[in-house]
Amino acid sequence: MTNLLSANFLRLKRSGLFWGILASSFCLGALITFNYYEMSRQEPIPLDGAFFSYPILACILTAVFIPLFFGREYSDGAIRNKITAGHLRPYVYAANLLAGMAASVLFCAAYMLAAAAVGTPLIGFIVMDAGSAVLIVLGSLAAVAAFCALFTLLVMNCGQKSVSAAACLLGVFLLLFASIYLRSRLLAPEYLGGAWDANGAYIPGPLTPNPQYLDGPWRAVFEALYALLPSSQAVECTSQQTQNLRWMPLWSLAVIALSTASGIALFHKKDLK
Image 1 (tube, one colour):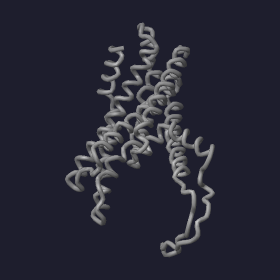
Image 2 (image 1 turned 30 degrees about the horizontal axis):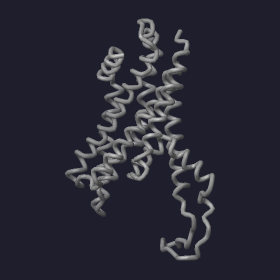
Image 3 (image 1 turned 30 degrees about the vertical axis):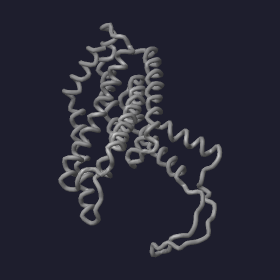
Image 4 (image 1 turned 180 degrees about the vertical axis):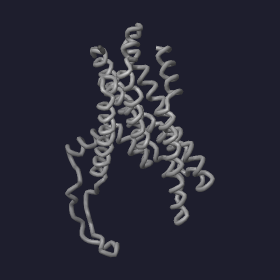
């Protein structure tokens, strides 16, 4: 296991793909933060919005990195060679999963470093209290780790790099869109009152039931689905919402455990010839 991890980290060190995505994360962090600075010149805004924009971006970058980086092991025959050399399949799977998680954490760190380096002298440091900031960072890392587990399951059990790459990218966007939709339905008010005129002025009116409001069993179903998806945690962190981050990482840990167990079971039966 130690040798497999060392080999993976050595590959990371020599990988142009890894350094390219890491540099992209850093540059995007600097660019997004600078855009916030331009907006702050019109109206003062804190750095928090730019600093905590990385969770969704990190999930997308991870969806690009894992299938392209580890998918090569099938085309190059590296996985078959590891098994032939006597390494157990669960260890090969776990080593790839841990290396992918480590790379994803570095993508997050590169973004935060750029946001802090550019934003602190231009806008000032984040105004959120330390406890909430720690919750968001830990919650975002748990969400990214859950995505890594899902992507590893796909990549380690699909011999075609192009197929696994397309599946990972499509999957991350579908999950993100699903979480945004679920969140919008859960946040819909129970009653509506008034309307906005053509000039953007609000005109008060009588309260009427909102047809988009969820109640009863359907609300429980939507809440369960929203909590289960790791993309929901990424959305919560990006939105700087901390009320659910004391328990949502537990769902991410459950996703990691279930997807890893399923992935290892499938990989153990896979014919690598």
